[in-house]
Structures are given as C-alpha cells and as structure tokens.
Image (cartoon, rainbow, N blue to C red):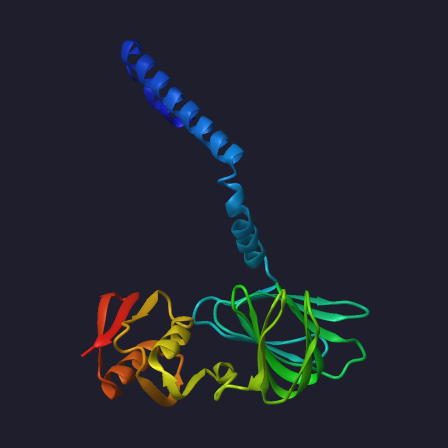
Amino acid sequence: MQALERRLNDVPGELAGPALASARASRRRTLKLLTLLLSAGAVGTMLPELESGWQIARADLRTATGERRRVKLADGGTLDINTASAVNVDYGADLRRLQLLTGEILVETAADPRPFEVHSGHGAIRALGTRFSVHSLGGETHVAVLEHAVEIRPHEGPALRLEAGQQAIFSAQGIVVPANPVSPGEGAWRDGKLIAIDRRLDDFLAELERHRPGRIVCAPGVGGLRLSGVFRLHDTDAVLDNIAASLPVKLRYLTRYWVRAEER
C-alpha cells in the first residue's frame, strides 16, 4: 500500500485520488474477508497442518527428499534418518527420548542405564536393547525389529512386545496390524538400497516415490505386476529405466518431476 502511495505522488491529483481510494477499498475488503474466514473457522481447520509444518521445520534433525543421514547419538548409539524425515532428540537424566515428527528412522541403541524410547503421534516404542525402525504413516506408525525386542505402547489399549524379525502397525487407539514377520529388505534404505521380492509394482513405486522429488503414478492396469531385485536409491531414474526394461510397462514423462508407468 505504501509503495502504491509513493508511485501515485507523481500522478496528477485528480487521477491519483480515485486510484488511491480504490486501493484502500480493496485492502478493506481483503481484511473483511480474512475476518470472516477466521470467525467461520476456515483458517482454524488449517492450524494443525501449519503447526505440524512449523515443528518439522524446527526439528533437531531433518532430511530432504532423497537424502539419508547417519548420526552418532550422545550415548554412542546410531540413528539413521530416511528420506523426508524429521526427528527431535531429547536426552535427559532419566530417559533417552526421540520424537519422530515425520518420515522414518532406524535406531541402534547403546548400553545405558536410562530407558530409550521413540515417540510418534500415536504412542511410544521402548527399546529392549535393540536395533529397530519406526516409520510414521500419517494416522499410524509402523515398527520393525531387526535385533532383540521392543515394547509398543499406544496412547490407548494394551502394550505389545515385538521380538527380532517381527513388525506391527499401531495407531493412537491401539494395535492395528498385530505382530507378523518383517518384510524382506526391511531397513535396506540405510545402505542406499531398495529390495523387492515378488513385490507389487504399485507398492514398489509408492516406496520409490518417497526418495524422488515429484510424482510417480502407476496405472491400474500394471499395478499388479510383480518384480524382484536390489535397486540403488542414488539414481531413481535408472531404477525406473530398469523397470521399463524388465516389465511390460512404458514410462510417460509429463515433466521430469511427473512420470506415469502404464501398459506398453
């Protein structure tokens, strides 16, 4: 508004007056609209997402899409952070606590008298001398144990102990998917790999999309195709080319950041 007023200083008064009045009226209309939106609660419905985005932006540790990090924790343990993830680290006198805000982590704990816990929006996972991964799935949390054991403690409902080689999914209301065998290749992203063993193409591409800017769309006609292999995450273009060469699919690029896998 001030910039417009300065520009109008050089305009004849009989023209500048109406123009400035119109701009002021437009600003008043905008302010009234914002007031109505606030009173109607339209902005209020966005507050949880805004708050979540703010927390992620201010997280102690973050990764961008396609980035992976390995961090040495203060107690000697190791924290691997997968693509597009954010986590806070809070080591106190009585508890070692990680808060997973979004994405996925893999933890290898160190011996320490203080308990070790990972918290998500749905509850806590207490380590029992272990190596395990935690993946935030929006409304749920996936946990996979690679060594020893953990105890899942949802906000509501009974706790669940997972042993090495088991995985489960829980929400704030309790266990959603009970203990079952860990998927082949679980945690391979730590070494920059994506392993598939007789995996559906649509599931595989959804996972690959997490490691690549933009969108990967899988047409329904090819989603049920199966593939197996070990794929390097440092070059997702090469992974897509490999799929197109080994399966009856073709890739259609709208832009570099939008690709669709469809029937050949």
